[in-house]
Length: 417
Image (cartoon, rainbow, N blue to C red; front, side):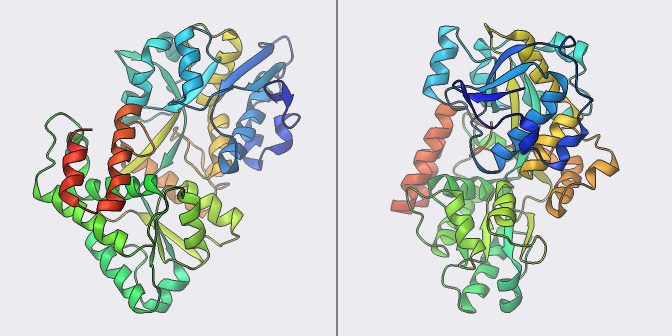
């Protein structure tokens, strides 16, 4: 199986770039057993751990469909102008990645219902029942999950905390503020690492989730949500306090800038998703559990807030049989282990045998256990809690807040999202 982007060879067969976790695929099929020809998939996974995960997933696909040539589709994952135009014009890629939930619902008119295929191809195997509503819109199953990225995480520098006598897992946001001040008193000028506007929105939703709990947090984003109550006011004031304990967010920064500051010892804490783990471990050479630690974000320990990565079958897909082979591997145990093992994320399936679990690293094994027992919840900033238009409006309000720092104004603007 070749892998190409716009007709240019990307890297030979995918197996050359796969991790050891990709070795659990089935024996390679013969050319007579499966589809052949092109398969165009838009993932948006073009660099870093996500690209590593894609290469590992493609190695698993090679065992099932060796005569398929994978082509990386033009256009980013939604919202993306080129991809949206292709869907509207009826000339889509054969599959594409999006988030489950509201983002999936935004695309529903352009997607094939998959209920019959879920039954005939066994795509529900190993999936927790609480996940299934995030795969549905308009009364139909529309997506196959490939993996889960947790968002409500607190990362801490074990060395700096030991020197300051601070905790790596404060249980409430107010206690995090106390620990940040403890670290600052020990001589660290900006104890919290924050990236650009998207990471400010990430902080905002984490504090709102901690203040309200999952049910009331979701209710915030429905018409008439409680934007004027004491819990909301307290969370937004805490956001202002946290930004006082961080370097001013630069408009062009993202989570990698914050992770670099954290990993280089310029900050003791970082609130961001599990994508930071691969960066800290592989890019910066830090040791999990020794140089850095992790915990659920303060006040959110009972929730597994996440971005659910799903793949869909657009109406009018030109290479439908190849697309079905792709969805098969995304739903399979070997495919999900390959993808998520290579990118430090979590398979959506919970039926991993113990020998397979043992291949994951320390953070990932902890996260696998958490995924089994915690309540799943969509992320606003990185997942499908809101559709693209409303998420952009929320990001605009968070961006403006970094300048005016008026909590009451922020509440008014978020109430209009």
